[in-house]
Amino acid sequence: MDKLQPKWWLSGHMHVRFEATCPNKDKKGNDIGTLTKFLALDKAMNDRPFLEILTFDPPNPNQKVLSYDPEWLAIQRLCVKHFPTQDQKIVLPQLYTSDIVQEHVTWVEQNVSEFLIPLNFHKTAPGIGEKQPKQKRKTEKPEDPQTLQFLKLIGRTEEAKTFRCELPKK
Image 1 (cartoon, rainbow, N blue to C red):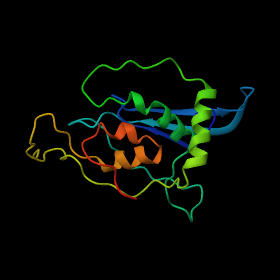
Image 2: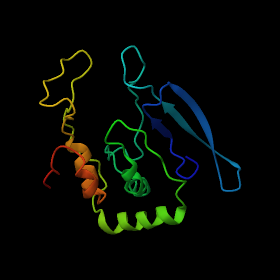
Image 3: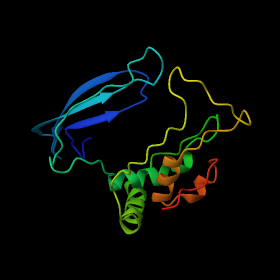
Image 4: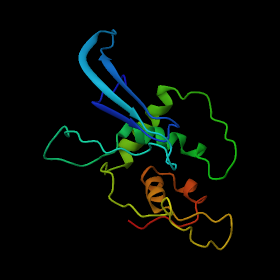
């Protein structure tokens, strides 16, 4: 938040709803007169406030699209190997240094040509109150083509092998 200083910072699955307004500062710690509105939403469960509709003006009114941030993609690329694919305890590594993150930023800059977030939503699991479809095996997980396409985008096709379905064709 200190580096990007956006108008909004949204986070989900935080186990609690939390709001804050954070003053933005320059590198010397001086208030620069702008604020970041932070909103964390609760887990998606019955009787929990996990969803809200917000209305805000885009930075460019003629361009109402969402796009990936190259540094965020680099961090995802770096950390995806720690993504749990089974119900097990994971051990996270020590904090990554900015040099290691920069290596992945360079990879992203050289290999990712499209930063627009694709409109590729596919429902992969039933919603609240909907019946669970019959599974062939108890351990079978639903297909998740969005995750697979994302892994392909960040060059992590090896990690995609732990998922049940194949990578989507471009």
